[in-house]
Length: 348
Image 1: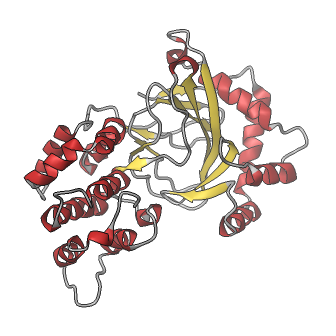
Image 2 (image 1 turned 90 degrees about the vertical axis):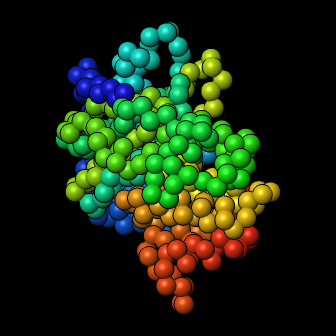
Image 3 (image 1 turned 135 degrees about the vertical axis):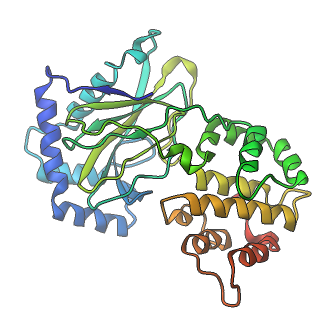
């Protein structure tokens, strides 16, 4: 589960820098700069699910232009990005689980996750796998911590997924679809790694978190745990980063990998769509299942995470409940889309 590491009193300067960083990031002119850079498609920052900003600090495959511009221009002369990251690693290694077996860890992929306006809780998701760890170094004082799920959902096989579907209003899948799904290696791997996000929303309504976390504290969470950024009515900033055991050959966290129920369901639909033996009946079931996941998810705009085209348009229309002219109901829209072999491909 989640571990909370309190601020390290022997590092007052690092905590002082975090407090100053919070003050700087709150400035409206900083927000305007970030918004302009996002509009210009600068790769050092982006908007992520739940209306959050992600500002890359030191991440593989990503530049840190936005963070470096803001800290270079507005932070006091003694600010040191390297010192902040050293403090983050120091805090992470205070989690006794990282020292339990004498493992050495490779740290990386530091980014700032923050919101300016009130935001809802994110869709529950998994973005990092065990035996790696992920952390949130708290920048803003007295903020809610990350939500996390401690139950045993274990939707990690095709069989467990089908059993979950059978308990939903749309029922179990057509036999041919179940047969094809069981044979698809890519689907089995996705379910093994990320399948737990497919539990119903009621399963995750009771996710826990720490309600008020101080600047300089660290939230530590093992990989493969379903979690989400909390809803908040005020500015909130944390530095996210990860650690992987050096000796295990574990794949490094990739900042573009994240699966929520809608994203994983959409990916499964795309894998199944053109499989031999999958026809209109099976496709109608797949789209009905996906539509239920979309309607169950509190976050909107997830259609933008799919390649632009007919499939993302389907997700958008289900989100907003508006169908093409002459199509009066959700069921009719799903049935018409199920007749379109070109609606989706494995690269959706």
